[in-house]
Image 1 (tube, one colour):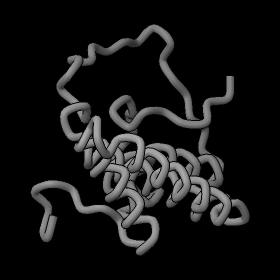
Image 2 (cartoon, one colour):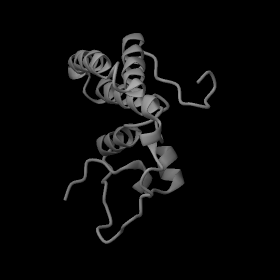
Image 3 (cartoon, rainbow, N blue to C red):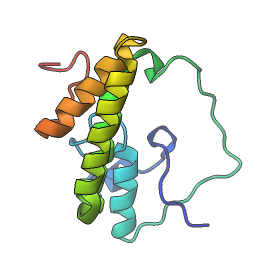
Length: 141
């Protein structure tokens, strides 16, 4: 089976190979960095395999669900950044779709979910300004 990408937390790769292949791009503060790196590796002729008998335990509720604003802004930024890098012919259409979605969701959530509304607002600003969202705790973030 051909695998297009693996979730970043499930990747196992030798450090030297990871660095030689360019590692994670700094253009992705959160989300899509794993999809990006797998696409670059596949373009360079690397196979992406998986161990079918493996498993892992995910501690529900310990992740990004509690960081709504960061999750939404970084997800939409990462999606657009992925298209800019790997499918530039469709990046402008994707950008317009993200903008429309963010405006619609911002209006829809404005009264019922302030954090979601703020997440879509920050996603919209990032996409319009062309500047990646800052992660909480980062310099100037």
